[in-house]
Length: 353
Image (cartoon, rainbow, N blue to C red; front, top):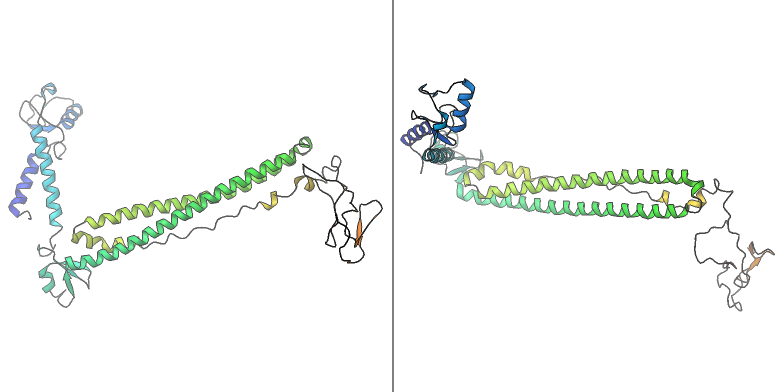
C-alpha cells in the first residue's frame, strides 16, 4: 500500500497541526495556554525567558506560565504523525524514481533495480533482467560465503591473539626467573656488585619492556582487528533482514567490505635471554678477583681411565694410549674420564680447564 497524493496532502496537514510554531518540530511534551494555543513546554518557557515578557507567540495575549496545561492527546498525535512520515519515506524508496512504479526487476548489466517500464526503455531494452526475488537468493549465498570468510578470519585473529598473550606470559616468566637467579648470585658479594647488578637488571628490564611493548602492540592490533571484524560481521548479518530491494542496493558494498585481509601481523619479537643466562660470578671475575676463590679440584686416580697419566699434584693429566678397560672397577670405561676427589652438594662452582 502506497500513500496517494491526497494522503500526502493529509499528512502535510497533520504535520502542520502537530508541530510547534516556535521550533517548527513535532510537539514534545505539548502544553496549552489560556488563549488556546499549543507549544512545546520547553519552547514556551524558553520563549518567555528570551523575550523578557509573558505573551503568547501567536496572538500576543498575556500569558501565565502557571496555567499551562499538558495536552497528552496532542503528544500522541505527534507520535502518530512521525510514524506516518517514516512509513511514507520508506515506501517512496520502493518506487522507481523516474516512473513511480514498483521496482520488480534487476538489470544484470547495470546491476540495479528497475521497474517494468524501465525494462522496455531504450536504456535497458537489450539488457538481461531477472526478477528481484530470484536474483536476491543468489546474492544472499554470495554474502553468506563472505560471512564465512569473516568468521575464519576472526578465528585466526583469536588464535594469534592467544599466541601473543602466551608469549607475553613466557617472557614475563623468563624475566622473573632470571632476576631471581641474578639476585641469588649477587647475595654473597652484594656490596661489591651493587652497581653491576643494577646495571644488569636495568638492561634486562629494558629488553623486557621492548619485547613486551611490541607484543602488546601486536595484541592490541589483533584485538582491534577482531573487534572490527566482529562489528562488520554483525552489520553484515543485519543485511539479511532487509527487504530485497534494500538488500540489493547494499550488496556490492557489503561484499566489498567483507573482502578484507587481516593476516598482516608483525613477527613476534624474540626475547634475547642468552645475554642474561651466563654465570654472573664468572663474567665479573676480573672485577671481583680479590674476593673470588676459584675451585682447584684434586683428581681421583681410582676413577681415572688407565690410558690417562695424572701429575704428582693430581691437578693435571695427559693421555698416553687407548687400552681396553679391564680391572678398574671404579674407573671410567671412556678414555677421557676421571672424577675429582672433592664433591659439592650445593651452591654454584666453577674451575678453569
